[in-house]
Image (tube, rainbow, N blue to C red; front, side, top):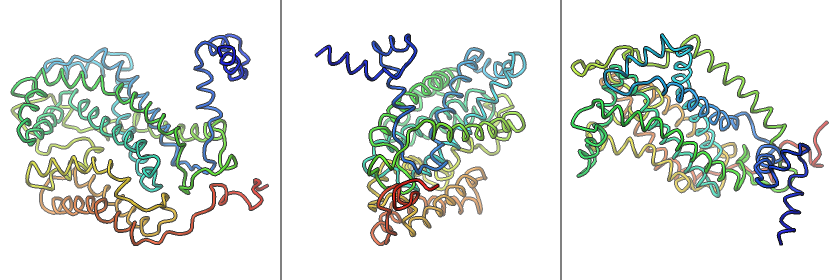
Length: 419
């Protein structure tokens, strides 16, 4: 038996010409694993550039962790020292300004990439069987990102950091029975102060590594059934797939170059465009900012929260707006995955996109007058889309005919590539 195992491993690592790599791989087959997952892994041949955003999200996560570790070396998590330490990083640390701006810009880039990645999954039905668990893990990653972003938002300890922490943590008091105890634990006392900042700093440092672990599970679930594709049709034979390398590595590299160009533009030319100006003022518990808002990537949920005058119902609605994504595989019962072949679904999908953009803008406006009405209409449609529109469309829609295979739309009937 041991000789058979040795023979199989020897065959698996026979492609490696370097004797050192062969020696290591024989004992620890990490190179064989990487060769399979990153080189010869069969991938649907019709993936478009929207499938780049998964790898871009991974790159953004790496950038955030790398810059965050460096920033943590100079940060002081106390009410007296936090704001001064950020100023020290910006003014005295070699290239500290660049590292901080990469980190702050990276947060927005990370969320932008993940949101596009998620909306792509919504359009092409990537949440449908057998990829439900893959979708769930993606939603868990989104929730962890939101928590990490909130904790990071408080660390500069400017006016918006302090009051944002005060307002958001107070929302937990709406939870029956245990709400006040949760708020006291988060604060580390009976008001936002040094213990609060220490807790948020520790959690902000820890959660990215939790995200890395969930991303690993996400990739394992992805490779269990392979990537979905624009047609939503399952792989029929080897003619429907191509190796990851060089086809999609080159495609991902092009997407990465474009992503880094946009990233660099914001970092060097508009680093403050994605930050709140009130955070350049030290925290003052005695002076409340006229308009407390989170970062742009949390504004849709903030708009839903403020659209409901009752605190408990508002918090419930905000949480439900995210948790509803877990139920999506069962709310949309259409057997057709891709929005390409679902004419009614496609129209309502773009209404949802417009609604989310509207909620994002409304969340950044004062909660009064026209914008309060807009937030309520937007929140009402958001929930109606998932709980009413999707189930109804799945029942009455007549989808277009699906291709017999992935290759049918891109190859001639003979099955050979066009010349």
